Length: 287
Image (cartoon, rainbow, N blue to C red; front, side, top):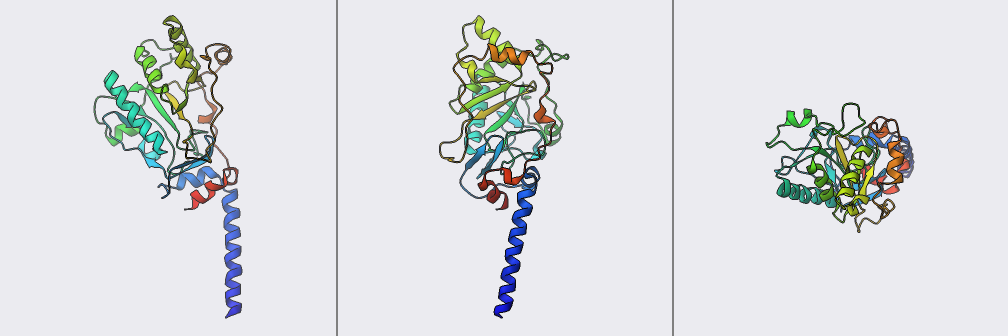
């Protein structure tokens, strides 16, 4: 009997070691992509925006009067409660000021982590994409949510703003979006940043622009990023933005690039291993 128990113990140990080796060498994006539900624990953003995960995620309800979430089949509408509350609050404010709702893109997957395509960040439940195009004045059905194609605010040659689509609404939208204390950055196309800088200089209104950061792509949507929650001790913030408007040398650097419309993060598949993530993410992926 003792011999049998000893053999079982050895087999269990071997199985455990093998399981750890498989998980540590398996692509993290494939592991987290297969997880369809959140875990039952307190909300906790872990790691950095591009190398982390999320515990205790909250799901963003769809079919709100103030917003619609596109492509629900992707199951990327999970976030830290701070992000969910921010979206609800800011979309309500936009509706009250401008009379329209917002169209949302990706947040995070149910337990965060790297996605197999589309983003390098969005891993800790603190990022959300919001489209420049206004939400239609109707409740969109599932087919419309999956197939709706928001328009770019750039011209067809990708070198100018499309003045037929751009308006003062977009300037005000980004200003309202960025002024919340939880927001650390809002990423927009460099051409859009330049457009904002020109108007802000004309009306002496540049103080809020420091959070608006130029980044390739981001011409159909802008990307909002929140600071780490105070109680998420393992969450890693980015360095604070400086106090300048960002309309000088940084913007000049971006404007010299050939392809302002192309972002590598949407094209390169992410082969990050589970072992590359914080240790806590392994446990979260297995619960």
